[in-house]
Image (cartoon, rainbow, N blue to C red; front, side, top):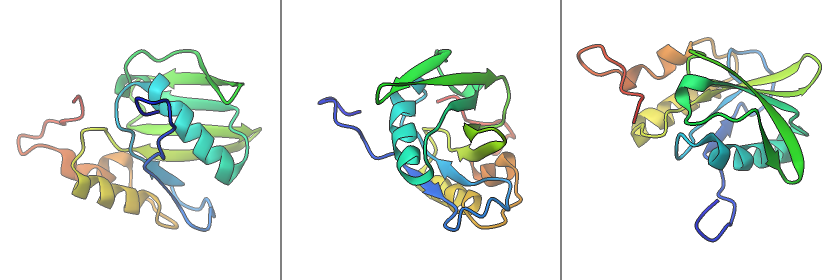
Length: 147
């Protein structure tokens, strides 16, 4: 939400056919590492396109202060977290019904983010998060994802 409490449209790109034949079903580029500020707008947008989201699984290393749940539009969304999930977020709609999104680190430059989002939302994509985010690696081999 912005300073006035107005929801921001998430920077989100989904695979157009939702065929779920690739590694990722799309990509999300949050504006910050604050999951409680970012997640409600994402869940709201995805609910409009995919139906109700019941649970979220995310990479705890990528976020600041991960809670056990967030409330979105009056509904409690449970959060599972795992260290080192390679910048991904899993959204569960029901039993055996999961969507996996690549999470673009917030400080990623626009060109790299755009290329990674396009790759993750391409039908039948099979690149890993590391491959899609490869341009974010510094020349010395260190990853600059902690901004």
